Image 1 (cartoon, rainbow, N blue to C red):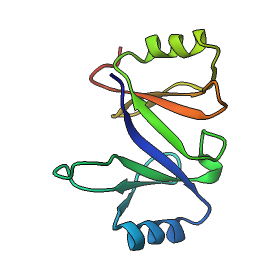
Image 2: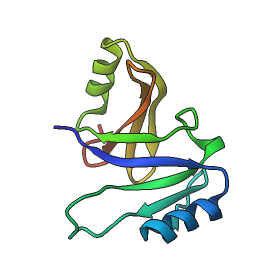
Image 3: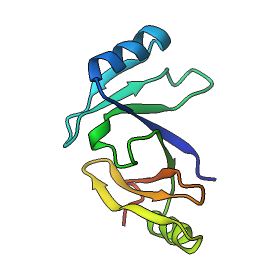
Length: 125
């Protein structure tokens, strides 16, 4: 069953956002060396029973209307894209590569939320 595996929280001020999540929740941040300002968030170790990792993303770079995004891992991105389209959803960001990582698609669900789907490179066709 596909699970939520990642989140993105938009920020207006990277230093302020990183400081807030570090001070309050103890998250550790590392800036990703990609095409947009993106700060990966370590929200806990693998030995902890709950949680997923995520990122803080510059609001103007967010591909989700500037709101919070959850990302669901799937094993066949094209098949799941076809399923959401058949359900009447709009594709917001078509299949896009993340070099060395995988591919993603963002869609607007039946309630107007932008949701991401991700397939890692081990499943990429």
